[in-house]
Length: 165
Image 1 (cartoon, rainbow, N blue to C red):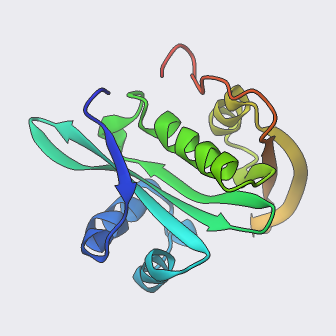
Image 2 (spheres, one colour):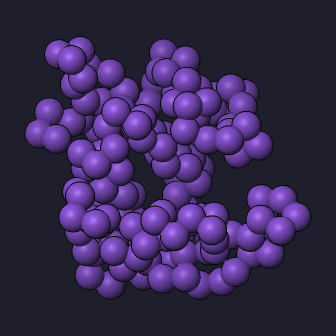
């Protein structure tokens, strides 16, 4: 997607970010509006929006929330609207997180993903993320997550899933 731009979220973006959360995540995994507001204003978090074109109209296509730790950047949340999936929005957001980690001297980028979602975990593995640990009952009893980590010194790969960018 050549017309995609990525920028820091603004308070005026909150309704769109909340709508993406509602569209992309199960109710038990969504951030509340209050949490989203906190993320935008937090000195230890950042919220990035990817803005693209759909039917000649510019709109927020994806959102990524990062938590900034001393030695790492954590991808807390990454969501792309279904109409934009497969167009490189998620890939560009992950590249932004890695670039930020490099620029700020962090040693890794981490995230948690549903262990059952093989498409998602394989997508992150295509970037060079590796499963670091299994987190039992992370989402709910019996719903485990994997903690994944990309060491910054590792080569960043393309992030393609089954031939899609």
